[in-house]
Image (cartoon, rainbow, N blue to C red; front, side, top):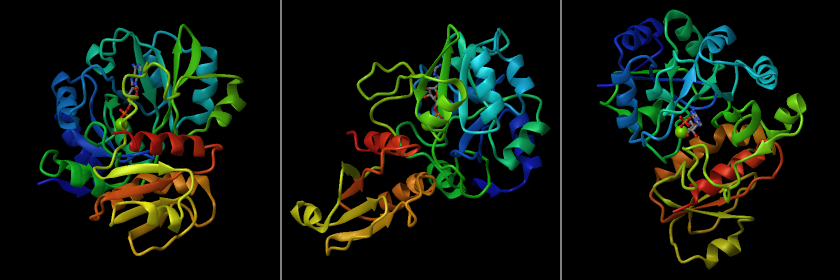
Length: 320
Ligand code: AMP
Ligand code: MG
């Protein structure tokens, strides 16, 4: 049986025995283990069914701890760390020999962040090692933003889910690599491109669906419900009426629409607030995926700030 608990000491004890648990963060829940235990890390890969070519993000409790894991910390990376840590920003920096190759998929660069969640910060203070913590979902599936989502994916397979409530951000971290000290956004995330630019100026975004995949996990299909999802610019009763499907789930930015074929319509925000929309996104996708519908019709959100990330995730959820 998997236990859902708020007990940080118990969580620390299980991690110290080199077992895998689920932990809360402000972005999504993670499947966490000691980065220095090859067995525990192998278990993460097998639980997630994740290809071994796809490296894991290392979670630490302080900037000092992050510095211990890298060869160099370029100036702009430091500015970003000081501004956004603890928070939903992952930096990819040249790794120190201390960092095991099984975390980085044998790359010379390691992905690091300090999560902004009180329980996980307390947990990191209690243990002597950093945690690898990829999102606690099977490969390609919708990320979990609550303890229950983790339970639905991994019941019986892990001992403990550390319950930290609903994730405040609800979307993964923004990943910025510093290959040869040059910053590039590899994955859009909870921190918007504008926020990054306001700290370090212009930055290349290598995340267009068309671009070659250089962050190994950024497949076009990702974050997917089991139910087919179709992404549209604008959802209307006329559009619903025109579809062959008889039982339809609908996800909108702000409007509620009704039609006899709509089983459930969820709106991401009642107040046109993109942050609220991000927080609700995965949770609503889980809800719509768990009712019996033929398809989910999702509507794009406004393309500004975190809206760019939300549309990226909706696009990937719509890929077959
Ligand atoms: P997740 O573990 O599901 O939060 O996804 C983490 C993503 O971080 C992976 O899919 C990779 O794209 C990226 N990543 C982690 N470590 C590295 C690394 N060393 N080099 C490049 N990308 C990385
Ligand atoms: Mg993931």
